[in-house]
Length: 388
Image 1 (cartoon, rainbow, N blue to C red):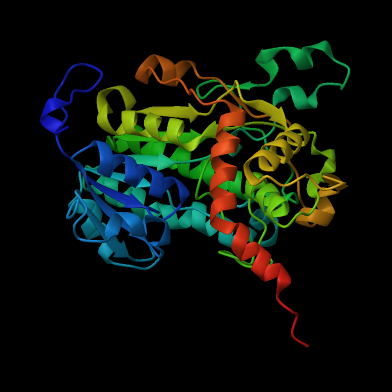
Image 2 (image 1 turned 90 degrees about the vertical axis):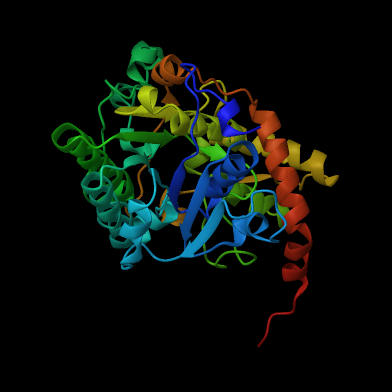
């Protein structure tokens, strides 16, 4: 289908865009590039330091979208080419970030620089050149819920008003400064405020995306296989790694935190709508999550164990989970939010978006991919003798 045959939500013809996508080689970027190549006539200037996850889109030359995706290997920290790429684009999508919780404690300076300082030129170039910006933030900007400060036996803890997170009314509540886990959320909140101020004072056309645990194939890494051996990815990849290695899943502080998970393909559809409906998306902050897929981390571990047994054909190990303290797992200074349940009113009203995929189905899709991609490599890494 060509762009001339496609219309936006208001019935206007969709014109082909040139999109500068920073962080295109990552988990979200790779899925967004796939969507744009398969379903639109837009051109993508894919900016990243790695291209492994989009290699299948870049070669061979016989691909139907040949010429519509160009890879630019550069680090946005110190490359003068960035402004030129933004200038010759209609829209910039900024996905670049350090977004691994284990790093927030151990690499707080890198976390702050990556998520605030390194994002400043992108905002500046978009504002100065009158280019539209879709900036990826995080649900972590909300911090802790109001309900988490109520007494444990308070009936108000069950009142949605005290824990549902709304883009336009919920406060952003962080822990004390010594809890360095909040370095990420604070940096992300400050860049949001800067973008919002650029919109108010200088007319920057912007959309801010707050992802709530997007899950699917190609997310994160498996330590020692396609990531550092000592690395600690986010919860789902951590659990996948344990399942692949037939190790117990580690539940931090009993796995009592509650989270919602949304399938990457559902979430990418929301971003696609933002890209092609600027009149409805500009000036808005959007939660993108699935409140119907809410579980405790312990429940997630139990469900993943069952799903993995199904997709791998292997019986579960005798002790599927073990409890560890957050200090032992993440180090000193870790803190966490109790619940992260997104309110979906704004995105539903503006873009008519609703996620469709159940938690079981998204886990089955993700773990089937993980098992197919990594199981053999993990077995080989386990069986290798350790050098003296």
